[in-house]
Length: 301
View 1 (spheres, rainbow, N blue to C red):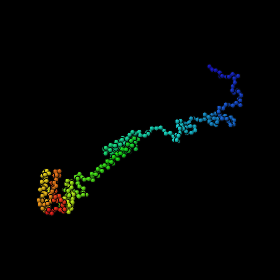
View 2: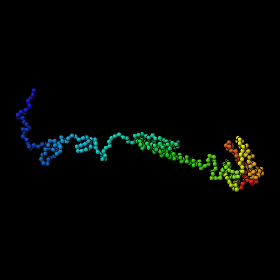
View 3: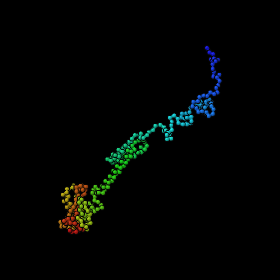
């Protein structure tokens, strides 16, 4: 079923039948007044000489504007002229934890105050820790430096103390109590027959003197006792008395009973005897503990 096309009644008003009024003015909403006459824009063109909305073409890419490359959405210029830093992954500060060698260096350095051997160990550990900290993002640089400094000072201190002890020990006598070689001191067993000397307050130690000078005694003979076990103090004195009597007469030129000189001797003790020493040192003194002047050899005194 079809309908005939609609036709308006004959008396209806049609726009095309209405005469055009050339004096009609269209309203303007805030647009600036034309300088000369009314300008009508062509379809698709702005009345101000710019392209209309349909002439812009496709929208600009993201991050660009119709006026060229610019700041896209969410992008703004940095207030100091630099673009904002991009977010990413990384670290800030010491994120690798504490360096174990740095801790050990400080501990060894402090322990070195009481145990000297750990001080140089602290220096080595501290240096290794500093090398590692230069390559790793770890904490502990201050402890490593403290370990090196404290360990070095403690090590130097111990070396100085040991050096002073050695110097002090070397300035005195050795373990055997040897006399100072710069003086005339000597042990009786270092003398030769005919040497003169003065006694000292030290057992077996004498002071050498030239025989023409005043002196206490003169070594006249060195004899040896027979081997065997140590006979004891009294028995060894008796054996020394008998052993020195004959050499005395031969050296002085007068028997002991007739001489004004006094015969004495020095014998080994048990320790020296057990070491194999059997020597007896026969000595002549002046009468009444008087000083002797000159040698008593062949003096017939």
